[in-house]
Structures are given as structure tokens and as C-alpha cells.
Image: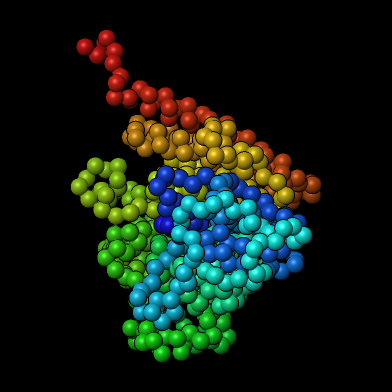
Length: 498
């Protein structure tokens, strides 16, 4: 599962917001995994949770909050909640699949699941176990394969009231149940962003993003500095497993004088040089802050940087759409090196979520989730207030059947058509993206202003207006791209051609 994460601290953003964002990329052979935006109300949250992949069964607290998620449409592989915001305006994205090394895996092996990872499994009717419904044929407290990306949003997000709380809750679950994979998770509130990485089957580390910095994180244990003294005492900027110092020293894991997780706990191998580090290089090339020039395959690129200028939502989306524009590595360039590195904006993106927690509006308007489906090079991000019990059908009612009445499938169709006719269709895409972004900001500004003037704002009305606008623009973009692509078909012929 290849994904890319972007974190932006409140003093690095254009409006004082914290922002976390991630491309959720499909690992499946079909090239896509249909997604939908969902709201999970407290009464719909399970009392007992069962993982599809690992068959791990976890009793959950009795006081969940409402939260958003972006689950899979098909339930044959589990929920995969992916990203969301709860009613306390705390957000998370889970997960960025990470890498580690054999020394770590030898010291704390990953758990083994009973079903193939990412594989097709039977329909998961027992994922949410009703409190008074039929019981599964397993004990109530089972730890078979631990927890993983499939589970994390559902078992963490409804129960946390700060980004730091998110680290603490997930840490307790990892230590008790273990995990079968290496993952990175971002947590966000109005003031702080924390990045957490699992280490082996039961260990973890976490670092607070400096307020004036950003980070671009590929599928690699990318954290390059860690203060164990702080993590094991005051925990101002760092947190970790309580036995992390003994775990590192007892297994001879530290390879540098100053502890560097990337080098000591990560993978830094030839595969990373092709698949991972070039994405970090390209993201920092866009947002800036480097003190010197690094090559795309460098393992020395800093984990976080102060940007050249304040970062906007559009900047984050641009980074997550990046395909090495203006370099020979661009897959649309036709140059020999154009397929050398894996781009951030890839064909098999399921969705991108950019959560923005704004400090200058009332709490019920503070959290906005910018959402786009399918390949970021060709899609548009649209904002939705999260303090609501319902989401517009165009965004939330994705079906297995392909239909232009679904934002997901319309985005997939636009991407597939425009990619095959890139240079003649890209002008339609650029106009589409600019128009949606401008109109979306205008709608958000209008509702913010109305609330500031004391008007009673109905969040669902705002979200419905945005969805209608996005559908109008998406239908128009699809018509334009389809028309241009049709004129460029290989079997085109006119009498005038001769």
C-alpha cells in the first residue's frame, strides 16, 4: 500500500490552521478501490470491534463521539476508515505504510494474521458486533493477529480529544494487541500535529511536528531525529514505548552517535531510493526550506522543514498531485528517465483527505475536510464542514456500479481519459481544478461570514451547496475531456484528411 503524507504546522500555514493530508493509494490489481465519505454517529459505533484481516476482537469504550471516515465501499476486506475528524475537532489519518529492517523484526516480530494481507476475504458481516445481537464464535477478547490499517480509525478516533490523546490511545492498543504491519499515523488538533510510527510488533515512537514546519513522508520510516530523554520523561516533543531505550540498546539497534530512527530502525535500501525518497525530494522541492540541494535518492533529506512561504490547501493538494513536473522524471515527458521513480500523484490513488482545523471561527465551523477521489493529477479537492450527521449523496453514496452520478466514479473516468490524452486534455483539468477551488472557497467564506454575523448556519446546507457545485463542474469537465479524447482516437478519419 503506497501512500504519501503531508503535515503542516499552524505557523507554517497561510491562515494559522493545522493541516494533515494523505493520498490513500490502492495496492489491488484493479487499480482502484471505491471509497465514500461517511459519518459514524455514536449510536452506530460498535461496542465490540472485530478485525477482518487479523480476527482480533477488541472491546471498545462506551462513550464514542461522532466522527467522519472514508471507508471502503466493498466490505470484503474490512472497513478501512482511512481518515476523519471527530466532534471534538480532532483528526487523524491512518495509515502510511512504513518500512523497517530485519534487526527490528528479529527483536520484535510482526504478528501473523489468519487471512492474507490485502487479499480477498469473505464478506465481513461481523465487523461491527451489535451489543445485543448474535455473538461471534470466538471469545470476546481475542488478539490473533493484532491491529492494522484496516482497524485503526474506528478503534481510536471516536475516543480522543487531542492529537496527543490519539498517540496515547493507539499506543495502549499496540502494546496490548500488537500489529502485523508497519504503519505511520498522523493526529491533529487545533494546536498540535503528532506523527506516530509503529516499530516491530508492539513498539512505537511519536514526534510532534514543530509549529513552523511541514513534513512530506513517503512509505519509509522517515523520522530522522528522536530525543529519547524527552520521550521517556517530560514528553514535550517526543513519545515512545516505555522500554524503548532498553529495546534499542539490548538489540544493538542504534547505528549513529545521535539516535536516528531512519537509519537505525528504518530500511534505507535500493527499493527506497526508487519508490520512496524521490517523493520526499519532490515534495520538499515544491515547498522549500532546504539548506542545500539534495539528489532524489538522498537519505539525508530532513524529515521536517520550514517552508519558503506559508503553505495553502492548494499547495498541499499540488504536492499530493506531483508527478515530477518540470523534470525528466515526469512520466508524461517521454524522456528515458521518465519511469525511473514512483511519483506522488499516481494512477491508483483511492482518495486524498486534507483536514484543516481553523482557529479563527466558531468550533462547529472549525474543522473542514477537503476530499478528492482517484488520481490526484486529474481530480479536484472539495471542502466539507465535518460537524454534521449527514454528508451529500454525491460524495457519500459511492456504489460498486460505475456511474457518473457518483463523484468517485466520475473522477475515475476523467482521470483515465485525460491520462491517455494528457497534453490535449490537461487544459480542461487545470480549468476544472481552478474553478472548483475558487467556488469552494467562496462558499466557505460566505457561510463563515454569515456565522460571524450571528446567523444560524445549517452545516448540511453548506455541504449540499458545495456538492451541487462540484457535480456541475465535474459533469462539465467530463464532457470536455471526453470530447477532446474522442477527437484524438486512433481510428479518427475525415475525407479532408486526404
